[in-house]
Image 1 (cartoon, rainbow, N blue to C red):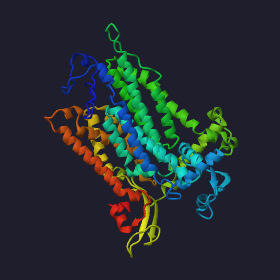
Image 2: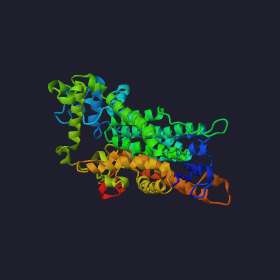
Image 3: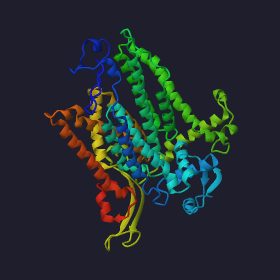
Length: 558
C-alpha cells in the first residue's frame, strides 16, 4: 500500500508522501490529491513568520510564567511530598548525598526549616526511592534563593514554564503552523494540573519537561535528516541520487540525553523511550520507502535502527548512570559499602565495587515500589488510572478547614466557615475535550496515516497505560501531568482540522474558515474561563465553604 501522509487542515498544509515509482508516475496520492515535488514532500517549508512566530511563542510563555511564579512562595509550608523532596534536595546540595532528618516529634524538621533552622539532618544516610535528577534540579533553586518555599519551588515553576515553550515550538514544527503551536501552548498554560505541579516541589513536572524535550529533539531530527536527503536527491546534471542516512544524528543524541535525564527523574520514562524508539524506526522505514529504496525494511533495521539504538538508548543509559555521580563519589551514601561487605562471585567480579553497590541500591528501590509493603498500603486520594483522562479522582495537596468568619481573610457570612485548598485538578473542559481529541487523533493517525498524530498518541499512551500494571498499589492523578502536554498537542491539531486551511480565508465563497475560527476561538476562551473559575482551589485561596463545593463538581473530587 502506498505510504501516504495525509494533510492536516491548519494554516500550512503538510504534503503527502508516496513510495517508489508511485511518486514519479502518478502525481496524485490515493485520495486523488495532487502532490507537490518529492523534495517538498520530504521536507515541507517552515512557516515564513520567524519573528512573529517567536513573538507569539514568547508572549504565551510569558503568560505561563506569570501564572506560575505569581505568589509562588505561598503557602509558607511544606505542601504534600515537598517534605521529602525539598529536604533531600538540600541534603544533596550540602552533602552530596541524601541524609536522614530528625522526625521526632512528628514534623520537627519541617517546623525548624520554616523557622530558619537548617540543622535538621542526622549523620545516617537515607534511602531515597527515586533517582536524583529532579532533586538536584530542586536543589539548584535552593542554592539560588535559599532553603525556603520560593527556593524549592523556583525550578518547578521555571521548567513548567519551559514545557509550554517546548510544546509550542514542537507543534509548530510538526504542523508547519504557528497558530496551531500557540493554541497547544496556551492550552497547556491554563491546565490546572500542570499549573499546580509547576508550583510545588515534586518530581513529576521535571519528568514531563524532559520527556517533551526528548520528543521535541526526535521531531527536529526527522526534519533535519529528511532535509538533507531532499537536498541530496538530485545532482546538478539532473540525475537522481538517494542520499545516505547519516550515522551520527545530533538531534537523536540530544534526545538520548533528555531521555536519560527523564529516567534520572523517574523510572517510568522508560516506557516513553521504548514507545518513541519504535515510532522513530517507523519514520525511518517510511522515509526509505518514500525514497524508493530497495529492501527498505532490512536497511532500516541495520543502517537506521542500530545507530538509533546507540544514539537514544545507549546514550540515555550513559546519561542516567552519570546522574548518579554524586552517590558514586561519596562513600557514606546509602548502601555504598554493600560491595565491600559482600564479595563478588562469578561474572559479578568484573563489575567495579561502586557499581555493584549501585545495582544493589536499585534493587532496594525496586523492592520498595513493588513489594508487599506498598501493595498493602492505601491512601485517601489514590486514583485508578482508568479515570485519569476524565479527571475522575483528583488529589488534594493541602487544606485548611473551618476558618472562622473574620479570621485569616474569611469574608463569609456568620455561620458559614471558610477553607483554603490546593487541589491538583486538571481544567475539566480541557481534559474532557482532550480525551475526545485523542480518539480523533488515533483515527487520523491510522486511517489517514498522518504521522503527526502518532506523536501525541504514543506520548499519551506510554505515559498512561503502564500504570495499569501497578494499580495494586496507591497511585495518584498527579502522575498524569506527563500526559497533558501530549493531550494538548492532539487537541490543538484536531482544532486545526476544525479551523481549516488558511487559503480558505481568502475565498469569500466559503464560510469554512470563518465558522472554524469561531468554533476554535470560542473553545479556547471557554477553557481559559474554566481555568479562571477553578483558580481559587488551585492556589490556596481562602473561600466560603459553599464556594468550594460549587467547584467540586463530582463526589469523587471531594
